[in-house]
Every structure is written in structure tokens, then in C-alpha cells.
Image (tube, rainbow, N blue to C red; front, side, top):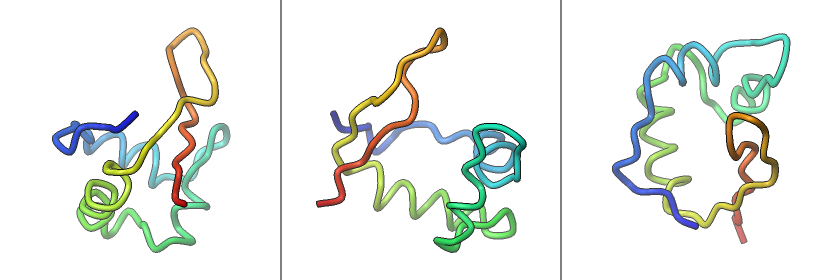
Length: 75
């Protein structure tokens, strides 16, 4: 499955969830290692849009809110 290049990446999702240290379901420490930070959230969004959205993705878990934890085929 490919995600649309026009997919909405909401600023609050980046700045209040992905690029913020959380007690549960934290993604920040992983993303920080790749250079994504709150200070450069616009660059992070651009990188996600250019390098991640075009890749094949598959849901790996489903909960009451829907699919989550997408695996990306980088190979």
C-alpha cells in the first residue's frame, strides 16, 4: 500500500506527538536519532513527504482506533 503524496501531515501530529517525548508510544527518541527535531519540524515534514510517503507500507497492528505501527519496506 502506498500513501498519497498529498496526504495531510498535521502540524499538531508532528509537533505534539512525533517530535515530543511521551511516556507511552514514544517515537521521539527514534526520530531524534535521524535528525528530526521540534526545532526543524518543517524539514522533518518535507523529509517524511519525500522519502517515506512514496514507500510501500503495511499495517502491522490493529486496535480499536484502526491500523497502527506501519512497517515500511526500505529494501
